[in-house]
Image (tube, rainbow, N blue to C red; front, side, top):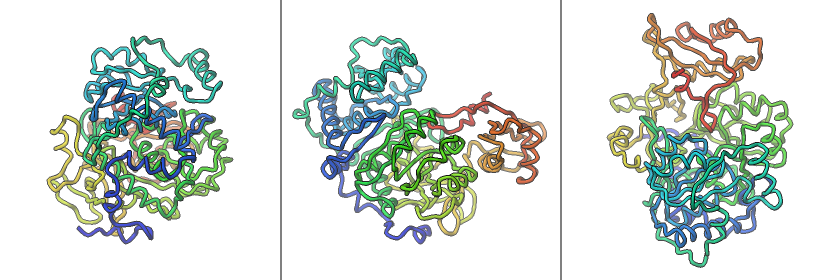
Length: 554
């Protein structure tokens, strides 16, 4: 196929990255390069404490040794990580990978049912969990294969006496740690310190070995583990480094990381900048907007990542306008559609363009990114990145012409091997010619830029017309009295479905009549919502993505 997008690559960005991938057999090889090149540079910072690359090297190797020698785990065994953004996360993450084991990232807000499913499905033998969620594990532990439980408190790796103060406040003052009892549970920090790095034996890891079972709802069905090989993550790191090269300087980047590390977007971004000597500033609770903004003011950061709802929340906080963006070179939005109203306001307040990127858990995740030198938000998710092909297909898997609407399909070295123990589900999302079907409806223009119209399953059918919630939400969000909005379809006797809006007000004077009138000015008749419901908040994932499916179920 003709790769029409290559003509719009920034100067210096290569068409392919296979030559870069050949240098590395595993993710640990990429990390060890940074440990060698940037030993005294800060690698991770959280709540006032920094760890250098030398410290991360030693501590992750000690933890890898503990897994091997004290627990007797073997290469390929699965180890679950269930924590927010704290310093223990990268230590455990890199330790598991260096031991040749498989990381199973777990949302720390999971219910017992969700946690049991993921632990049983993955066959995890060990888990590192923060104390706040230990009671959830207690309820399901007996129904899983987990033999070893390592528990940590949020402040455990902070400096004395702050570590004691933080843990005391969280447990005794804020009472955020429900009572739990897990016999033979071991403290994570104690376990890490017990590990003898001299006994650590490097396993023979190849590109074809599994690095992550990254759970996702996927494009169909229930939560399942996307099998991400070392080569998938290596590919995406090399692709991202090539794309970012015109804007970044090795050893000098300061990256604000508010999205949870268990999420593929945040996970890979952190790994990318860890391989170029960057400092990742971990935000433990980004929903505390005042605290988040206070932390932002402490840094001359160069990169900030997030999702649309996070950016919107920041923009609507009175203190955000005083944050210094003079050093920022990259403001990157992913995980969900960036709305024009948010992007325009971001540019006005910060002076920086909000760059939209796109990917899936199944693509490790990046597949399309906008050029970093675009001057304004363009409404597109970007160009296919190096060594990546994107086509638009119809329901019969026929590739459509430029400008035609269909399902976005992706091929590249970052695409997963398949779903763990679910060959039937894997077959559902792979085309006969080797592309993964994303479940997103979109188009490609004649410059190679890709635009998402909406999620295939979220499309609303009104009197035979396809209506895409993203378009409705993008328009309504431009009303200055609207804080957040979600659109869904509800059954209707006359039109098959009718559009219903759920709105969180920014201005309490906003009325249903105003919303309908605003829509009539900006949308054709069949796209006008029939129902409007005001809410104090909308259901979201822990990353901040609005859950339309939950609204449909209410």
